Length: 348
Image (cartoon, rainbow, N blue to C red):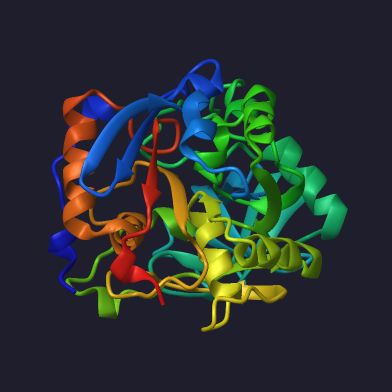
């Protein structure tokens, strides 16, 4: 499909620079068929059915952005996928003059060596330490890898350490937050429980590739970066039991959706999953297991807007986004959310 089909005009003023406070006070746009209804996130439970299950991504964002030097030249590095305890793939700026075996110093006694170069500024870095020691160094030297549309000074803001982390964040490894889950509070979870909605957790370590622009003219030519995920056998059984009982599977965020769709077979049965997924969902995809999606509002021409268009319908999503812009909804990672029901024609 032509990437131009997923374009729209978004005023700069719509891009949220800080989250709502409290988190569950963010706005929620209900998209059901052709109907659009303005709510708040705290109203979510009333838009779900008893017996539904909400699936969250429990990944934890690490301070994956580093500033260092190659000789006298300044370097910025954003880690995006771990290959080994001491090795990460990363996006480097500027990357043009980087060569294999170049050393980047981040602090006294903390450095990495370039072991490979890829396309689009991607490099592979082997650090001088691994495992917990490397994570400890990142906590000391790194900053939260906020997406480029959230404007911060080089050191970021102290509040982002909490604001850009979800209530469910327990498994370190992501370099971008599963932003739909940023809206959740203990108060909101209590309303779901009272409604008879159950919850489950899966893990997808979100990579910085999430924010890469689509530079091709046709979606068939775009290559997704792989991300590591896990669906346990227990969670697979829990979700399958909900489906068999007539409940709906509600993905909280596109990351949970992509992982569950990667783990489901063609009959709609969810299987345990452990490994990488590079699933790229565009209109024409037949969804195997997800019935409802809660998601933030995404960038024009992005793979995430393509995903929601595949789920709910392209015209429907253009109309929903136009309404959101007109009504003053806040966009992107720290912005508001929408709740989408899957278009009937998009089921497998």
